[in-house]
Every structure is written in structure tokens, then in C-alpha cells.
Image 1 (cartoon, rainbow, N blue to C red):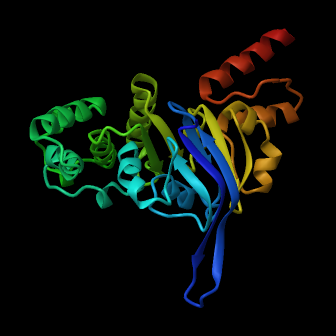
Image 2 (image 1 turned 90 degrees about the vertical axis):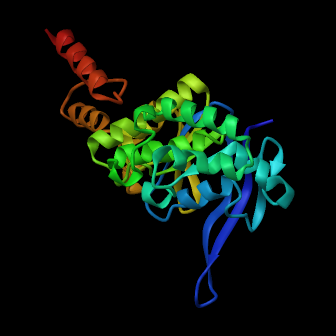
Amino acid sequence: MHFIDVDNVVFSYENEDENNTSVLKELSLKVEKGEFIALLGHNGSGKSTLAKMFNGILLPDSGTVSVCGMTTKEDDNLLEIRRKIGLVLQNPDNQLVASIVEEDVAFGPENLGIDPKEIRIRVDNALKAVDMYEYRGHASYKLSGGQKQRVAIAGIIAMEPDCIVLDEPTAMLDPQGRQEVMDTIVKLNKEKNITIILITHYMDEAALADRLVVLDDGKILTEGTPRNVFSQIELLRRHKLDVPQSTQLAHRLNSCGFKIKEYPLNADECATRILEQLNSTV
């Protein structure tokens, strides 16, 4: 049994003129426990809609979405599904509800009816997991963007989900904030085996995932490892998508006569590939 099973899902939004806009079109996707998946696609491809399907915020018009065998269409399943899958939004200000950091992180467990002593333990552990424990007594509104987003992630961790879905969590952050959040996401996946589903427009972030799923017009265009997907440069370009800068540089060098066989995904790999090619020509 797959951790998340999206089977032949169709979904449409109803417009004011009562015409339906089809967003997801017979889409199927399997997610395994502990995977780190990045969802890619241009605006309107269906990424955010799919993200809201995972924990039942949106329900399919047809097809099914199941979590650990529990379908989101059954109302009795939704509470347990939402315990298993937490959602982090793009703007952390929309997710922070208390004026003090530790109170904000405690909000979710309190609503689940967790014992206060257990909540104290969960809050401390969650803040330590995102390296924000020393800020537990600080005012939330005084934090930087990256710090706010890490507190928002801590609030989800305190609910002890098996999976965290992040909808462009770094879109509003500066480079340092983006790095802080991505370091946290990778740490949670690798050290705590939390399943991560990341929606991002930053290809360098997507390159950190185990698997990429590229959406286009409500369907899966292609999927695979980052190296496999990003090697399909012309396909991605036709669908208004980019690749990591290191991959793009290697592609351009090859067009100039270089012979880099395995496209790099980051700056270190790129430097190594170029050095190997230069040494081979000496």
C-alpha cells in the first residue's frame, strides 16, 4: 500500500459564469513513505490544487485520493488524514496565529486535544528540529521571513505528521531565508523520515528532491530523478520551465563542443565536470 495514492483524479473550479475550469485531468500519482518529491509546473498547471487534495482541503470531482488506505471522500477519515499530512503555505504570516513563537507552535496540538505536558514536549522538540528553540519566547512579528517560515513548519511538526506539503514556502524570502528553510526541509526528510512534497519554482531547490513530478495542463508531463528530468531540457523549455543554472551552463558548453555526458545539478558538480573535461583535453 502506498502512503499517498492519487488515482485518476479529475477536478474543476466553478467560475462566476457557471462554466467549469478543468484543473486536474485524470491525474494519477503514488507517493511512498519517506520520499522527498518536488512538484514543478508553470502557473495554472495544477500544483497547488493537487497539494490541497492530499489532506482533503479539496475533494476530487471523480477519482480518489487515499492516505494510508483512507480515502479523502469519507468525512470520518479527514481528521486522521490531516493528522498525517500537514500543509505549509507560501506566506508564513497567513499561518502564524499567536504573538509569541512557542504559543504559535502549540496552537495545532492544542486543537487536537493533546495533553498539556505532551504539548510542552512537542513544542520544544519541534522548535529544536527547525533550529528556532532559542527564539521560543520571541514575538513572532519581529522575526525575519525565513525565521517565520521555520516557525510555521515547527507548528506543523508539533502535530507529528508523517508528511509535510509545502506550497512554495520560499517564494517570499531572500536568499538567506530560502537557504534556512531548505536546510530545515532536507533535515526533516533525511533525519526524521518525514515525507516531503515541495512545490517550488526554484529549480536548484527541486534538485534536492528524490523525485520530480512535472505538471502541465493538469496532467503529469514527466517524472523521475532530478538528473533524469533536468536532462530533458528541450521538453521543459517547450513547457515554459527552466533547469538549474549549473545544468543550463553544461548544456550551453556542450553546444560549443564540450562533452559533458552527465549534466550537473549544482555548482560543485558543475565545477567537477568542467575540470574533468579540461583535464581530458590536455
